[in-house]
Image (tube, rainbow, N blue to C red; front, side):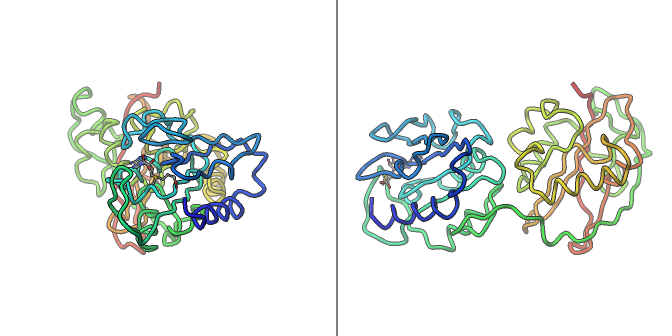
Length: 321
Ligand SMILES: C[S@@+](CC[C@H](N)C(=O)[O-])C[C@H]1O[C@@H](n2cnc3c(N)ncnc32)[C@H](O)[C@@H]1O
């Protein structure tokens, strides 16, 4: 390991983790193998857990990833910090690795990737890429990661969403068979523009849409996150200690406006402000005999003027567990 790399990681440790020594942090080091040095000593604190991950067994490797592009051994939303040095350039499918990193990070967690922008070819076990700062900035804007790229920064409010106005239409067409269309046409399902509702409102349809958006997705439901369909879990975060402050405040303000501690907000609010995605999704789960309340209807269809187009909506209709 080049001394300059160790120094850069030491600077990350100093600038971003000083003062957090009393927190129980899980720190993953991707490509941790000690070829001629490691970062481990920088992260030795009684309350911190440093785990060396690598696709190959070796010195300073605590966990060998059976499939480096599908981290089954690492739970989603489990890492407070992911670091990686001199590994990115050896990672054949770095875009998939970035998705695994994003999946493993808790909301508002930190990621520090060091990679060379030049240097002779050296295989560990392959040598694929050299990375410029713009390249790292670009991968940092990958799904569920945010921030400047070459530097990490916490998620902030979506700056280009300023005002939302609502117009709602209710589906008045024929009522489909419940088992086949799952609530279609039962006065609970709202489409984008009042035309026929989505053919299938099953969880998997909602999951597909969440997978497309997945920059930000939060479970607002008054029900516990365990009521969330498992298939949504990789994309949706629970509101909790790591909720961005502005979002918690917005949630509280809306509940106050509608004078209810439950309901009002959709169960899931997901959005992605970046082109070409640039859309928002609200998901509301209802039992067969439940109705969408008036307050909830406000979420059914919206238009964000700065985007100058209606927001696509997906509504999942099924009983709570
Ligand atoms: C050049 S070594 C860097 C080791 C150490 N971080 C350092 O800076 O000295 C690159 C390491 O990345 C590992 N590696 C390469 N591709 C990987 C991948 N896709 N997932 C996990 N580890 C990978 C290799 O096995 C190797 O141990």
